Amino acid sequence: MQMAVVNLHPGQTVYCEAGKFLFKTTNVTMETRLSGPSGNGNGNGGQQSGSGGGMGGMLRQAMGTAMQVGQRMLAGESLAFQYFSAQGGEGTVGFAGVLPGEMRALELDGTRAWFAEKDAFVAAESTVQFGIAFQGGRTGMSGGEGFILEKFTGHGTVIIAGAGNFIDLNPADFGGRIEVDTGCVVAFEEGIQYGVQRVGGLNRQGIMNAVFGGEGLSLATLEGNGRVILQSLTIESLANALKKAQGGDKQGPTGGLFSTHTG
Image 1 (cartoon, rainbow, N blue to C red):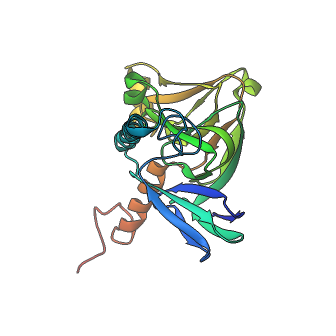
Image 2 (cartoon, rainbow, N blue to C red):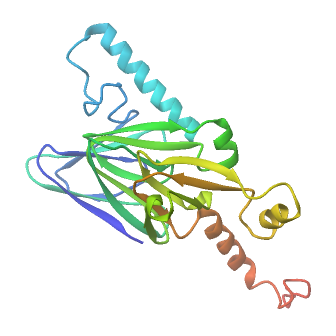
Image 3 (cartoon, rainbow, N blue to C red):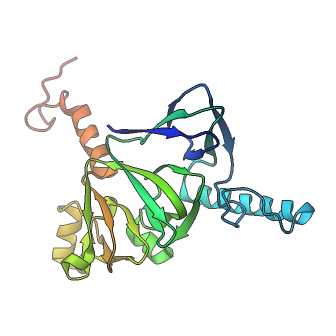
């Protein structure tokens, strides 16, 4: 399992999702906030704009924070972010994901946003704005993971994590479109069109794919020209493997029908 060790210059700030922090040096301060850098809607790293201050500015900031918290609650994410800043010299902070797998640093230059599935985000510079992108009810009900995506804009580095190994693809290299298990999508660049399609019809073969093929009734579709990052292990397959291994020593060769356990 990989982790990211970040060296901070004096005054530099990074933020992470609650639960992704590992360690820090003593000169790095930690602050927990309910909003990300885009919580006030002006994209300036979470600081209140100089215009429209006073009670009106405070009210807009509070409303922006409440909206972002509500979006994260709907997404099933933690409500707070943790901010880390170096004071009086360079500092070090360590972060990691929650599953055995790979990590990747995405560099944003302001020209293209990145979209990530809702469990991929680990940490980012404070110059990167965080947001929630809704893919629509129909897509969400069909694709599961695809209903709510996290969106990153601005300039700076974003660190993401996934399960297993990462696979980098560009749909343009494969005729402009690829079809993927919905649980394998980690992140993709702006310009890639994401959708969900049914695997076959409600016929004998479609039911065979869903019930015995282990793929369900839907696949994610990714179209366009841009970077796509997939993971080789899905959370569902990992959970199924652990569940199977957990009960394996209590079952006989016939799958537990004639168990050798007599206790």
